[in-house]
Length: 102
Image 1 (cartoon, rainbow, N blue to C red):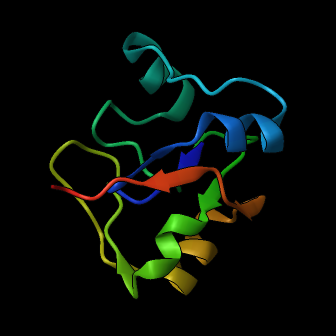
Image 2 (spheres, rainbow, N blue to C red):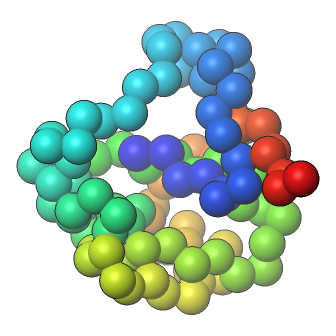
């Protein structure tokens, strides 16, 4: 599971260089089975055992982040330290590019 800023998108070259495979989205019907959360509510904690979490550097530009927390209509305010404690990431990675609104 890769957690990125909402104004970022995957940079395919960076992703492949780090993970040694092509990035792909989990098909919608499989999301809940793999994460225990519905589409739109996937959060980086309370995941099935063995789920690997990576936090992207794009999150570091914020003091607080607001990840979903298990349902399509919920979110939680977390500092980056709190996000790290809750998600227990394998690593921080740099696999995105920023996309700012025009």
